Image (tube, each protein chain N blue to C red):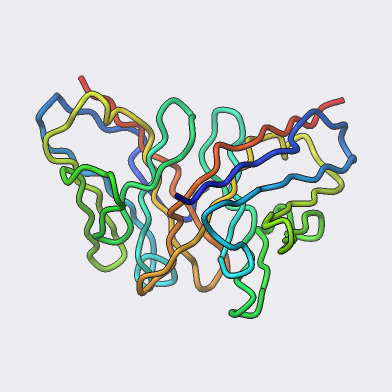
Length: 109
Length: 122
């Protein structure tokens, strides 16, 4: 059982806007910013968002937000190369541990 | 450019030891907050442990499943992070990644290595 809860799967068509969510509690998401990590075909993970900031080289169709204990990653204008597993992660104050969500498999139809 | 390159993975019998390395370039491990993350076959990402920078006291924290068996350390002269794993179990079979933690008003994992594969099997 992951400390952070994500949808198991989300799908969308090319050009569509999709939003992935990550739900936690006041010891993790409620306290700290969230990192979003993309992993294509179980390859090298890549950070695509931290808080609402884009790492260098990540297209600006990716955006991040947070409300209370839920964080969201939105992809506006979905592209075929966005098909991947997406994980959210943050520090948990009470566990003194980094926690991950179980991951969302994003399929581009 | 910051790069992290893991090595040392392989096949080991249950109960045995293994040491993983993470060679860094473009950053100084002494001054960085670093973490190990693993991924079992077909599973999601799982945090293993974290070492703070020397200036932040070098504190090390571990995930519950590995506490007491795994040890994180660094060699400043080699600019390398290590993960010493003892009393290995079949459930430790995974790809092990090292990551750097950077900071805004919170810490986040920003750079990832390609990983090294550990298989624990008799």
